[in-house]
Length: 172
Image 1: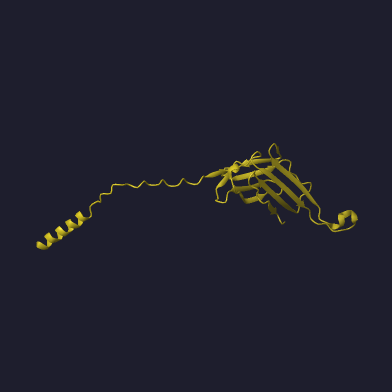
Image 2: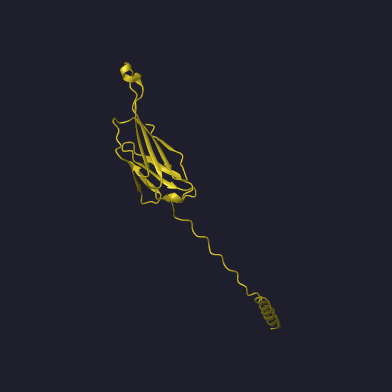
């Protein structure tokens, strides 16, 4: 019985010794930082990365995504927010040289250029359901003869950011 009484007394003293201190100050908890924005307007973007570029060689339609270097989708691409340029070169199959009239067997080509900046725009710009995805459709795109391969050059620029032109080569 003495042992139990001694054990209870020691346990009670240990609990009393763990009482609170007299410091009633509470530290304010800093609020968590705000989450990064889901999107950035193109005019506010300080960097622009173009990705997932695809070109339909028959129609000239270009699809791609825009994001900043943090990976945040860029929205608001339009004729009044950015300058766009689509340039296409269609290379015909080489022909066997028969005479000077045949251009000495050189590969012939055809080119098409479409620009969009401000009020002058011959490219339809449609933002996709996925934020930061776009489809560009050039007005009046048509090849006079079906090319063997197509090279496309895509340029995007804002007042503050110019993206290096993107070359897409069908390599056919």
